[in-house]
Image (cartoon, rainbow, N blue to C red; front, side, top):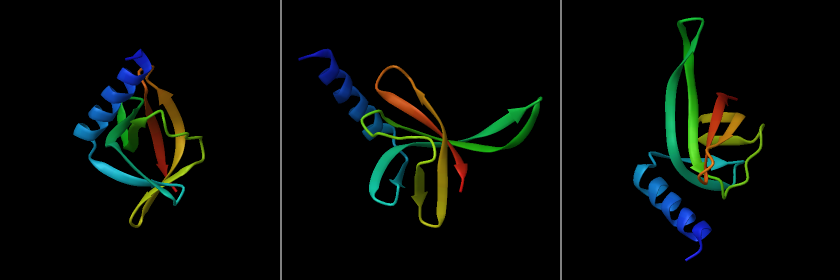
Length: 94
């Protein structure tokens, strides 16, 4: 089995086991991932909750793309690939 296939299988298992939220990408595609609201700390003070959404890199995402769940919606403001086939999306309320 090629390494890329093994990596994809492991990432699918990680997302399958740890995903806690399904968001809709650009109003079309439902994506499962790890949604977190970590507090943003600036100058030593907690500013606000900065949500992140960790998903597989198999989904093509760009800054400005939207994700939604019910009445909540977010825009992608940052993308951090982790080098292992997953990416952490930094979100802001839209």
